[in-house]
Length: 322
Image 1: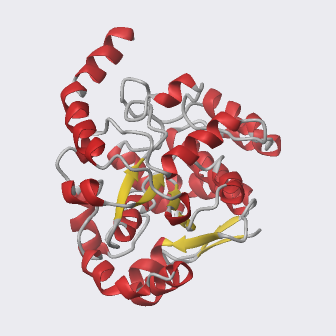
Image 2: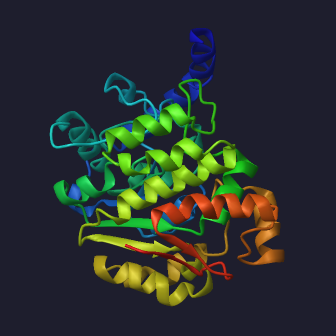
Image 3: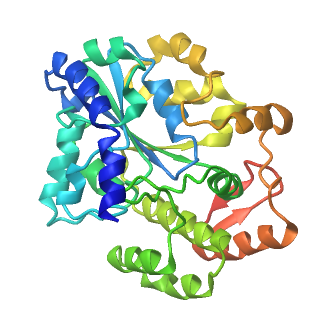
């Protein structure tokens, strides 16, 4: 295992050197009051939304600050898969504050040659994460940032894309992605104090059911602990009514003057979009169950209904009963 980690991380040593050289040229800390935090489940459109925000002049993207390879500082803080934050976890809060001020350097190859000018001259940051569900409500109350956005998407579409791409939001220290086990999900359930869902997890056996449980747990946690300053973004609404929805997102942070620039990015796929998904969206629009059998679809519904989620026949026809 150690050999795999060393081999994986050493492959980034040159990339990290390039990244650090570029970032060190723009060494000034950013103001946390200008920072935008964005979160959501893996494959919910977080990358696309964060790239829309980073089209605003002076903003650059900080990508996945809880990825164990790209941000190895989190390993020293004991974060293995997803952080859980409480009032006593000042180290995590301080870390996120530093991320929001762009004081933490990423080793991610995602930034090797993309948006070099942005990284050189940006004075503000957008922080995007698919691993911050269990800290997001807390930091929205403790950090005085410009905006907090949480994106939700139909669970059938999310789970379909997670299975198809392998991006589940869980990453080992060697960089490999995986479906969370019952043991991991049970530990998270206990840490966040939601033992009432343990019985649901006990009945989940397949990868699809485990991913459905994970989707239900992380979205239930955020949406049941919403602060007044967290703005919910519904992926399907953003796709189908882009102008009005993006206007509603930019108004609270007084950025509507850049709406035309953001619109130019709308039809360009995000860096994490699978080429198959581009053709799929063009062909199928917002259909969500094209990869599931009737039995698989029913197994997902049986899990997520325990979290107060109802699914309709249309892609955006899902609701949260809380």
